[in-house]
Amino acid sequence: MPALVGSVTLPPLPPPLQQPSLLQLPVLSWATPAPLGGSVVPLSGDLDRGWHVLNIDGLGSVPRSLTTAARARGGSRLRNQRLDGRSIILSILIWGDTEAQFVQRWWELEDLLCGTDVDRPGVLSVLRPGQSQARVIDAYYASGFDGEPGAGILDDVVVVTLTCPGGLFRAAEPVTFEWKPEDPVDFFDDGFPAVSADSIGGEQDVTNVGKVDAWPDWTIIGPADGLTAAITTNGVTRQFVFTPVGGALEDGAAATITTDPRAVLGPNGENWTAAVNWATGRPWPIPRGTSRITFTAAGVEAGKTRILLAFHPQFRVA
Image 1 (cartoon, one colour):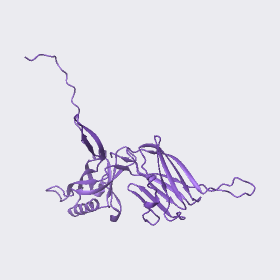
Image 2 (cartoon, helix red, strand yellow; image 1 turned 30 degrees about the vertical axis):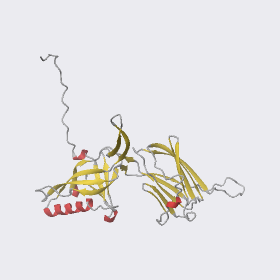
Image 3 (cartoon, one colour; image 1 turned 120 degrees about the horizontal axis):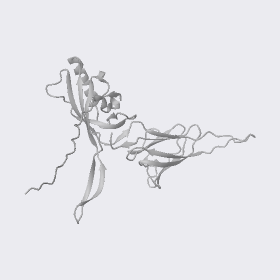
Image 4 (cartoon, helix red, strand yellow; image 1 turned 45 degrees about the vertical axis):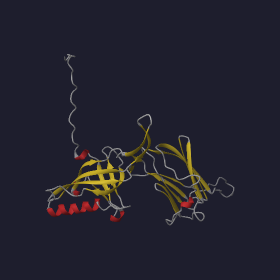
């Protein structure tokens, strides 16, 4: 038979979730692919445009794929994980004061969002309330610019799906560093000539505020005979060596080293893969947190040679 165990006081129910107002949503903008002008267009916050994002889905932590292997004693073991791409879904209201104005705005927004193609992504920018810098992600139109049945005279809502193969957001502005040799200094007062070394060395503590590795780009502006760059994180050091193909970089000539994707380009955009000694090291990422970067460059000249480093911190969420 049932037994009486005493009365129970239930906790109060939580208040119902409130839908955010348009002013509380992140501010979105869209940079069109370069062939379409490369312009930045607001998707929210500028009602004079005649469209506004009503809802956003897909700004959370990037999805990942897990590889597991069965264990003989039962269960499984995680063997590997890989961050995947993501889809972002935007519900966008489009309106006009007249049928002609509505149709013109519909065509304009379709051209802005749907003009992406292979190697021609748009860039979605997300600025959350209270933040000073936006996070951005490369995106391609996938589907959804169709509208709702029965609408499409003075207003309509499209539910657009953007595919983001990279998955990660990055800071809109890069972190940059520049090193250059000092001008020679005359330490003597008795007519001896000033002496300046033909090499420079740099050491810099670099903080990656992102939540995953950042992949930097190097630019070496000549004259320069070569570059050796190393990074030390938690006591572990990695380095790579760059030697210009065919001899020293000439005055004003620039070579570029990118790490994602890995590529080495000469002054005219030619493939300089052979300029890096891949057997002894390869261009490295900058891990999350603080690392120390050291480098030496030979054959430099004061006032002309420059070594540039730039990277975008990356994040799993917008």
